[in-house]
Image (cartoon, rainbow, N blue to C red; front, side):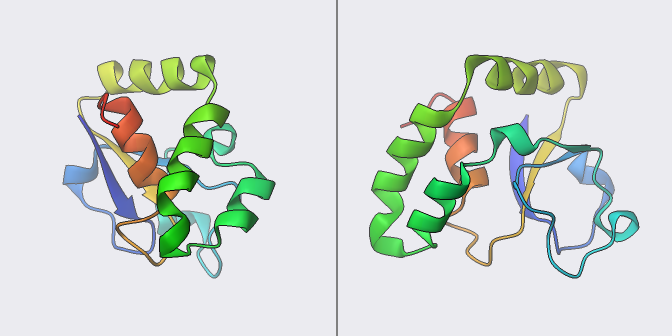
Length: 114
């Protein structure tokens, strides 16, 4: 089971295996405080796509399409494997928006949604 959570929120037992899916380490957060089990930079959007999106709501639909196109089969396979190994996997992100960020888009992909 996959879910998303902002990395700045406190870790809890229900998180299971915690995977950071940002390309950049979250500002002002120590590794000890983040409680990240795996930092999977390669699943994050490219710098170009991240900068283009800029978390502008009107670009959300197009961002999701472009991000899906960037995702590599090997990286998705690694995430599916983590999902099987750990019953709970939380995809962590640093963005302020809880509705429009790469972790939400990635979760849709992992759940087979469009």
